[in-house]
Image (cartoon, rainbow, N blue to C red; front, side):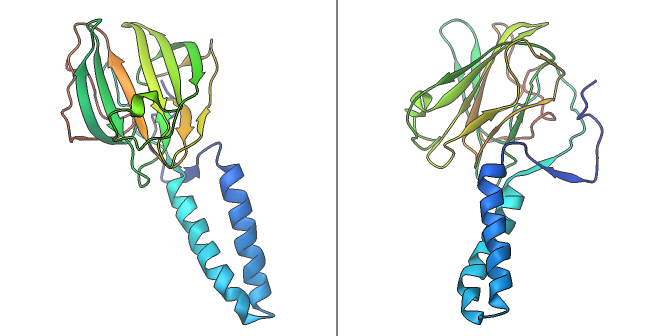
Length: 213
């Protein structure tokens, strides 16, 4: 069972946020202290404090109660498109807005067969050419065979942080990586497996069932 299957009231911060959060938080604290000596520092302290608060929200990483299904959503967001692929698979693309949780999760239990970083552009995730954006391509060895998942950077999200490497074993719903400030995650359902979601439907990582039973 995944270590994320138990619900918890606590909210943690995602791994990989330090390069963004720490400098902002330190600057906010420093300017707040300086405001005590000179109120003009408030012009810097107030926006920095607001930015720090916003980042704490953006980089939240709540525990989840694991959903039921062979394939669970790898991302929080909205189903952007469902496309049949030439090899018989079905691609389900999930758009992540800056307000979504940015931590992605394993759609199935298995082993990480490969994790490949592919250089590319930074078009908005809703652009039809965003398939060529900076991305990380995952392959999982699972009971359903090879499952491909792709984390795609967007116009704002310019950094993908994988938590695992090739050879790692994962339970369904385990945290596997972070896309800073959202973007898009694609999952390819094997031939013969139909999607249980529809375009425009909201998904929750590790909870929403993607395959139709």
